[in-house]
Amino acid sequence: MKEHEYDQLLNIKTGERQIGFHRSYHYHRYEPTPYAALRELFQHYELKGSDRVVDFGCGKGRLNFFLHHLFQVTITGVEMNDEFFGDCLRNLETYREKAKMGSGTISFRHCLAEDYDIHPKDNRFYFFNPFSVQIFMKVINNILFSVESFPRDIEILLYYSSDDYVHYLEDHPLFQLRKEISLSGEFQKNEYERFLVYGLMY
Picture 1: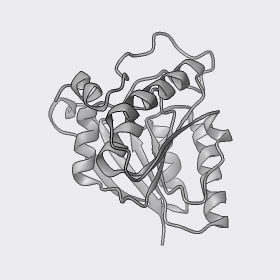
Picture 2: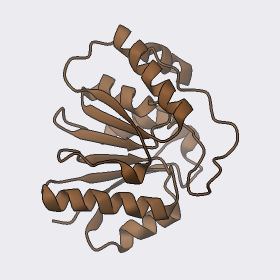
Picture 3: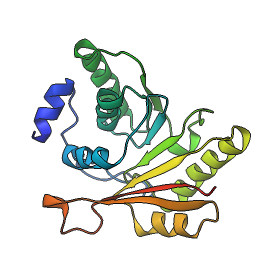
Picture 4: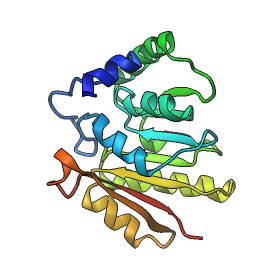
């Protein structure tokens, strides 16, 4: 299936890309994860219905709807941009018109990633290089504080991750790389076209 066909299947609109850049260098421009990449990821990585996923810098919510469609998980999208947050809510409305919601829920939070209040059951965290490593570090610290209060296994999923993100997690005493999924086909020539899954050390 092509990109726009997935949007049609889910009854959402996520394809248009942002023109221009955010006024702060800490926040990167919107670009949705390609559906082809997501499809390949979830051939090698499975979610359970009990998982709670957080997508930091969710844009228009593509990952949220795709994951709910596949796994019926509970997923929260965190987006600071007013316009994209509005797109998320509109997409949620149209998705609900067509989808059988079943179990799991989809919700969105309009805030900075570092201000998102980690839920005690949030356990899978997705990043498509949405902001600088300084903010990434703050978010990871928030996650670790939550785990300290409510112990659980967590995983950090990175797509097209910056070298700074990787170096930070590789050097972190609490994290280890659990899985690397290099993409095939049209993505194969670019070494950054991969998913990295980090988890807490046992």
